[in-house]
Image 1: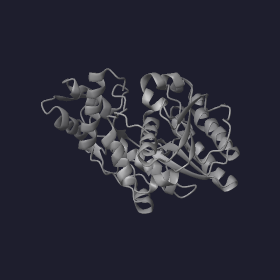
Image 2 (image 1 turned 180 degrees about the vertical axis):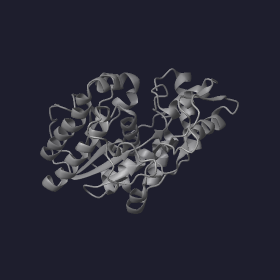
Image 3 (image 1 turned 135 degrees about the vertical axis):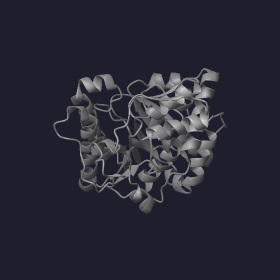
Image 4 (image 1 turned 45 degrees about the vertical axis):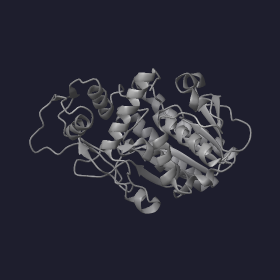
Length: 355
C-alpha cells in the first residue's frame, strides 16, 4: 500500500511501537465498528489504517455511520482507506452486513447533547438498545472479541473523599436523576455485555473512559482542556467558569488508542477497565499548564472564589487493574499532549482542513 502524508504519523508510530506484537493478532481480521466518526472512533480508525499499511495485516473494517458522507467530506483519508468500508445505518436498527466478523468495536453513543438532555430516554435507549442490537448482531456474525466503550459516568458523582475511583467501587448515579441518563445507559449496557459473555461466549470487554486530550478533540465543545487550548492559541484570557478546584486527569489520545486495542485483544472477557490517567491536577493547575506550554503570558481568570476547607470535586480513575493485568499506563505526558494537540490544530487551521 502506498504511503500517505499523515500529520499524526509520530503518534501512530508510537502506538505501533508500544503495541508490540498486539496488532499481529488482527492479521486477516474483519472488524465491525460503530462510533467510528467520533473523537475516539477516529483515533481507532487512524491507528487501524496505519497498522494495516505498516504491517500488511490485510484487515477489513466495516464502519457504521448515520451519515457516511460527513466523514468522507471531513476526513477522506479515513473514509476511503483500503481497509475501510462505510455502512449507512443507525446503531439501534441497522441491517446486518453479509459475512462473518472476527471483532467488534462498539463506540456509538448519542452525540447530540441538546436532544439528549431534552429527552433523556433517547440517550438511555441509544446506549442500551443500541448495545443489545450490536450484541445480537455480534452473535449471529460469529464475532469472537467485542469491545464496548463505556464511561466513568457509570460511577455517578465521585465521593469527595475518594481520590481515585476503582472498578470495584459500588458507586452509581442516583436512580431518580434523569440528567444522569448517559451514566445510567452506559451502566445498563455494561451489564448486557457481561451477560452476553456468559450466555453466548463472546469475549466482551469494557473500557470505562474518563478524560482525554489530543488531535480531533473539539476545542469548542465545552471541555476545559480544549477550551483552554483554544484560548491560549488565540492569545486570549484563559477563563475558568468555576473556582478552579475540581480535579481531573487527562490521557493523551495516542495512549488511549493503544489502551483500547489492548483491552479488546488482551482484556479478560466480561471485565471492565478504567481507561484514563491517574495523574490528577486541579482545573486551575490545568489552565496554568496550558498557559506554560502554549502561551506563558496568558492571563488566567477564575470566575468563582474557592470555599475555604472544602474538598474538591473529582473525576479521576484508579487504573491499577489496567496496569497490573495489561501493563497499561500513561506514556505521553500531559504537557507533551497539550503541545501536540495545539500543533495539530495549528496545522488544521493553516491547511484549512476541519478538525
